[in-house]
Amino acid sequence: MVKKRTVYICSMCGTESVQWFGKCESCQSYGTLEEQIIVIPSPSENILRREKISYSSKENNLRNTPKPNISSCFDEITENEKMQFHSGYKELDRVLGGGVVPGSLVLIGGDPGIGKSTLLLQVANKLAQQLPRILYISAEESAQQIKLRASRLMMLNTEKINNKNIEKKELERCNSKSLFILSETNLEEILRELESLQPQVAIIDSIQTLYLATLNSAPGSISQVKECTSILMQLAKRDNITLFIVGHVTKEGTIAGPRVLEHLVDTVLYFEGDRYASHRLLRSVKNRFGATHEIGIFEMIESGLVEVKNPSELFMGNQNEMVPGTSLVVTCEGTRPLVVELQALISPTSYSSPRRSTTGIEYSRLQQILAVLEKRVGIPLSKLDVYVSSTGGLGVEEPAADLGIAIAIVASVKDQIIIPNTILIGEIGLGGQVRSVPQIKLRLKEAVKLGFTRAIIPNGKNYTFNINLEIISVGTVIDAINAAFLG
Image 1 (cartoon, one colour):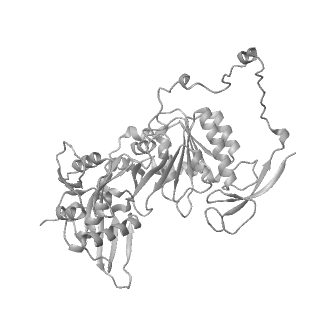
Image 2 (image 1 turned 90 degrees about the vertical axis):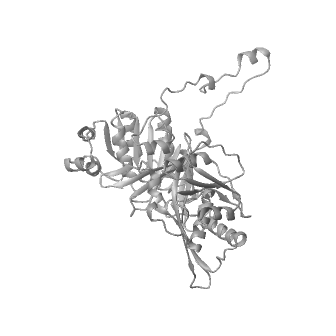
Image 3 (image 1 turned 180 degrees about the horizontal axis):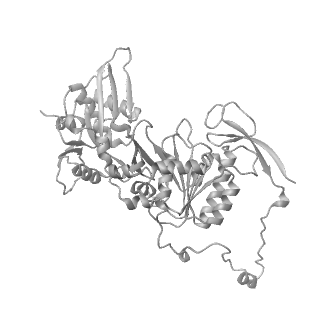
């Protein structure tokens, strides 16, 4: 006999409760408990059967020697000759860890209108040039709407070809017969199509709009999202189909649905950026096949998304018009070094308590750096407004940018310009010392490639770099200030 029970599941953290409360006891969120009906099978429906092994005699022990039933010995597992294939975009391959892994499950999230569907449609078009079957499943658009958007993005006319210097053969390659479109929300119909077509890559846009008819809950609920993703994961591993899944995000910027959704998939990517700006960042926060916190940078133009080949130029600003209160740092996003310009503005406050504002910089790091400058260096900042930002809105989170933030603040206070072509690398301790940071050689190589001639870095290690760069090692913030300014 089948039994049913009612539970209340938090849409933010997935915590189950037998009673409804106004606030989740786990994540302290209000109004997030949703009612779900759980079907409990009777004990007679349990299919688990175990046979007892008798150890009464030596013959039984020999006859019942443990052996694998369906598991495989690790030494007998053969590796695929081609574990990864290119997606057609080097920036996406970088974030995925070198390429697309067959049978993997990739979750892509981002704000509405940021370009998730545009990116995946262009990826599907690129993959259709090298693979025989690519399936694009849209639960939000009809097939005619997808083709209309594809025509706007990929079917370029002659005028655009002349302006963008695109060869004619590139236009012909857009008319591919390997790309299949399915507009469906029923998961059972989607599974039938996947088993019938057997595509190498399938794209699902989006997971929150799919539903399983056997569940009583509405599409987008916790049970629907979890069950649909679990079934798709089993299909991807069994048939070796690579699945790209689009996920909606909440107002806090996290993937909508239960947290278990991110645990089920192999890779979690976030598509970030200001919808009013042109550049977009594809960031990896989980990757079983590559480095996490890797980023890929794209630019949104009239004909879709294009790769940014030199991202450092995007975040460096105009070096010919340096103003007081600016500095340049080298930050590492995964395995990619990026040169970022930091800006600081210090002005007398008009209120009883001064303002502290950051854009792209962690607020707590700024508070710590201001305390060090006032206590260890002697710069009075307690009655001044401080505004710090990074060019392009790139989130600079690692401590290696501390020295650049401090020098930019000092430059704004002194109303001076840092010595041209100087790069700053280092973490600031509470005692005013400059600490070493990882991947220092990789950062210096990026600085040389972009034409910098001086680098202020922390000492404490015997650096042996064969780099055409004037390296100034400092131990304290005061030493870095003396080295950063003329006189």
